[in-house]
Length: 639
Figure 1 (cartoon, one colour):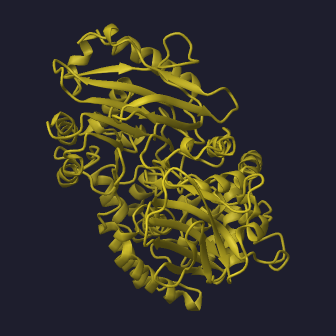
Figure 2 (cartoon, one colour; figure 1 turned 90 degrees about the horizontal axis):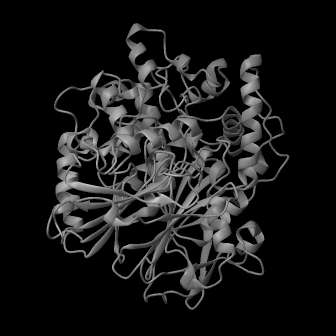
Figure 3 (cartoon, rainbow, N blue to C red; figure 1 turned 45 degrees about the vertical axis):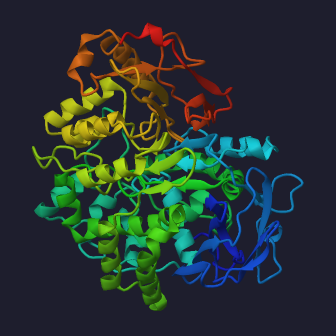
């Protein structure tokens, strides 16, 4: 499979990490992947050396030479806030990060550092990082900000990634080839497959359909046509995107290898993949994708450096698992009713739990990790035990604690809008509400009596009305899958409840909603009509980190939306937001009248003492000057 001998490059001790995850005054959470179970010591300035025994570091093998280290250190006394604290990870008591990952260090530094912020006075946020998109990587903007700022009080409190940290359903051919080479090099666990034309992962990797034709892996049965069309991307989206799922990740090993290749430059040094046998047309596509992947991996050293210095929190959207994940009740019946598609979803969810979800809130995953350990132990003969794997997948599909709340000021409430959905009462194929009644009730409880709150919703709560209308028309016609018909207003019940929560007298007076998903950036201020003491809401959307909307199409949508849904338009009274004033901000460098900013990068939000946004910036990954989002004169927007 690989074009290099397996032993040409010796295996490094660490494949990826450390990533700094959840950070509190008395808690440090780190994520790391080694080629063996490592004896680690955390060296912390002002504290000393902390041996990472089994109580502080859970090790999950995912292959012969791949071990996920989940590090959770609870401190006896609080760390000082708003000051730089050096930290290091020693291997075997003596090898520091400077020896095994020098790319993680900034100039003249002997080790990484962290800053525990006393409050969230600023943060970075973004979503949608597709490695083979031609745009530059927005996470490089994070590294640039950190490298140019030495004042710890000017460091962002955290990086919030709000979905599509990987694209499990849309993988470039060269990336998939590298994934297969890495699986072989690290001996990532194989698995048995049911309901496909191949019986196991080893046969999958070598099958002619493995590159650009994965829908053909389903047996040619009439009963599989619905699955082929809905799940594997036979249904294209001509309105919004031309992407498809012809290189969808399938196995647990493939998804784990993907995480190693998008977060660290180290794994790339272990592979040198040659193109597989392809048709001339596919080879042309592969060659173009190769140039984009080469550009992506060239920046990974700086990306890894930023992630070692700034705490990162993450929540899934659909592409972390599969396109349109849980879009409707009909989608769920189709996808979970077939053993092959259910395994694909489940494998992505296991990998998400290990690589993203656990680091947000380790306490929620204790039982799940025990079951994951059981699965990992079953791989001693190289193959995972299918009944154990399926049982873990069932556990994760029932799991209800992907969301989390950070006890910060302002409170940070991160929503899971994918697994707790309000299914349509009208028709199985209609889009589900993004949160069900129980989840919305829990959200209200989390918000009660906070003066201000930051809500992270992967999809905007207040989106671009014209685009939502287009989505609604397609849903009415029975084609929600054609346009990603997922927005908060697509389900009457969920929309009404979330708006009522905002109007509740005991919920915050200031809300900032951070979102991504849509591949363009915008800011709305939302005011309750005819209520002088009503809450103030800001919808701040930054998307994508490495993705953009088709330029000409977005320009037309922007122009038509301003015309059809201007503040004085009577059409506003036919929307669910008619009791609210939607006031758009203007991107600083936009052409006359534009409200939507279409440039990959990362968002930055500064907060005043009341938890209101004082400055909103989009850092552009193309090297252009940063774009400020300019507040309008509220008097120009009638009540």
